[in-house]
Image (cartoon, rainbow, N blue to C red; front, side):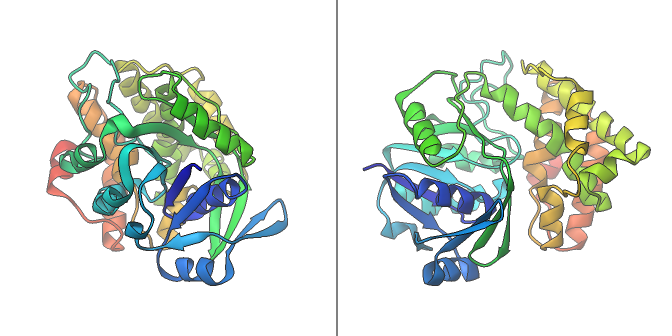
Length: 338
């Protein structure tokens, strides 16, 4: 029986666990605090399309009790992955595959990337300071994932699904492997959509395009997506951020198959939604600023693309988060994003 562990029982990790629990696998969930206690005592409750369903799941805060896994989904915030590397070692074996279901550029991004630049087969410091994740997890174990569902924890042990069922998957080298096929089939069996892409990096950037602009502006001004769409000045900043993001992506071989206008219109058509960065701000959770926007500035610096607008909004958000105790400056990252 396939053994799957979901490390992080937040909104996405919990939703994923609820879906995968409907399949014939050995599923474990790693959680902590009140959320873990609630799942342990009462099960995980998923509210979707107005219906509530409860799932009894194996949950622990100690990975050592689980043994080696076939697949590990990492669904903690991207900036927190380096903090759990040592814990992950206990459940990683020779054939374990690791899927990071997070926002921003993934830690393995330049593994077998073939961009023709000196970034190939190197880590990104703003995502993976000093390459700790790269060294200890091994990018050869990585399967790429772009996460589309929107969900939130409404109270410990309760997750509300707000829309979206797609987890797009792909191998870093674009191949159609057996391990990719198996995990896609399991996600589909759990009621999710799991397309397998040979050019996943393009899709990573289409999502990043929105994250580096709407997420940042929403967090700075506490606006919903449609409110940003109704504010010409904020929309002008969003467009500038997206333009710089596109220039960087195209410099390393990314193909943007939709226009900036299309991407903007898709975002502002969503009524009343504040992106994850703003949700984290309200919940007083540390912000994943560097994987979303610091990574772009770092790459831009290395490929000689100017990122004046990205740097400006990045500094504003870091300062706001720092003043609220939700961001701690790193000398390494400050140096590479100047």
